[in-house]
Length: 256
Image (tube, rainbow, N blue to C red):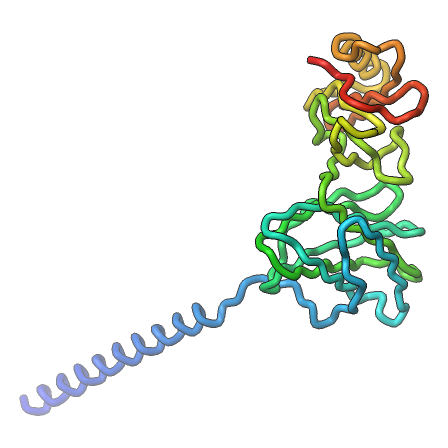
């Protein structure tokens, strides 16, 4: 009987020690995971310094072939909640990757549009005031350089993102016939076009699109006989008014 009691006591002690050790180990493990978890960030240690960006001042960058696989880092100072548009183009076709890194080192979400002739236009918005970094990468083999510009006011949108009445201006160098998108500008100033029809989900193409745009023009544009227009389809239908003489428009010509 004495031996049995001793055996039970030893087993109980071992069991208690095991429970305590298991609890301590798992508590320490959970604490370590919580403390060492870090937010997703964009690495900047492998970047190449590039000129700072300021409002409406285009910058030309020459690429070194030995570091063409590394992002170029442009300093950019933004106000809290400031919005703007970054335009990246080149003399040759390439598909740039553009990222905005905040003062705390974390990436800020951006919204970009790929250009038909190569390059990209990216809309950005600051989370807080401070010094940001704009990273440009994705260069083509043998690419000699690129141009980048920060525009602090007008947003850049695709034809499917405009609304009736919006006054629009294509990117410099692009024609209205094949615009990648538009800057939405103040109608009081000179502009190349104005949206007079936007039908989301429409499947009109060619002749059907022309007829629909004609009907909308006659309804919403008092000077229909003195203007021309372009139709964009693929993601719904968008009809954009332009001057018949090719001169810029001034003021709003669209009613209703």
